[in-house]
Amino acid sequence: MIKKDKRLSGKQKAAILLISLGPDAASGIYKHLTEDEIEHLTLEIAGVKKVEPEAKEEVLEEFHNIALAQDYISQGGIGYAKSILERAVGMDQANAVINRLTSSLQVRPFDFAKRADPMQIFNFIQNEHPQTIALILSYLNPQQSGKILSALPQEVQTDIAKRIALMDTTSPEVISEIESVLERKLSSAVSQDQTETGGIESVVEVLNGVDRATEKLILDSLEIQDPELAEEIKKRMFVFEDIVTLDNRSIQRVIRECENEDLLLSMKVSTDDVKEVIFKNMSQRMAENFKEEMEFMGPVRLREVEEAQSRIVSSIRLLEDAGEIIVARGGGEDVIV
Image 1 (spheres, helix red, strand yellow):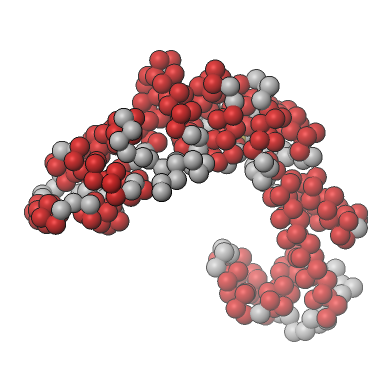
Image 2 (cartoon, rainbow, N blue to C red):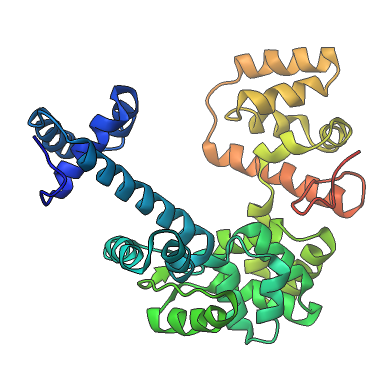
């Protein structure tokens, strides 16, 4: 029998928790465990004959407090979680829960800011050095970063976008120093080991969240400063599979603009959704001819397919620049009605 006054090990607590949750919930948890963990935990559960109600209540309460603490940390950081828990369960218990979590918890830098209003963050960082702003934006979610980048002065937008794209790794000392600036203003601080951030994918996500005017301004400036970087970013901002996000009129315009051979090659390895949306916007006869040609098309080099898709994507961007089609972007300003 497991009693409340007995000092329980971690495995005993886990066993009591799974027994208390019942077989359905326990089996769901098992799916996320390793084979060794399942084996040890199953043996522990098998050895439990009876659990006193007080011991069960204590374990469930501890689990509940830890779950709350993790949720609070995701909302506002460790400091925020501790202050809320202190009001709920008292200082001693709150400290015990937070200490248990932080001993093994890996918190990504600036996680505390991911639920903050982008304009609030903007007010705090707008006068910081461009490298500092670039670092912070690379850690925030793309929607936040896109809004903040759009709100910054045009003369620094390109510089910051370039810094994000070329960013590699940042030392923990620098991250800690920058976080301390936001700590005083957003009431939180998080520490983290050296972490890789930034890069092409990061700046693509950020630019996908800005308005079209800001995106064009930044890319035009980048083409002058670093043509290769600008071209690499442009290639990744809209891929061939994204054609499913276009409205029917735009897809029809793209079909008229592109060579039939490029369309055939591009659909060689595309998803069924892409093929369906393209066929739907062709005439019945054209779609039947395409399906027949694709059926008898022999093996082709992947490089040829990628080049064809790249030409179609380039045509889509040119049509967008000319105002002939609309490519929906983040931020809600390009909603098609």
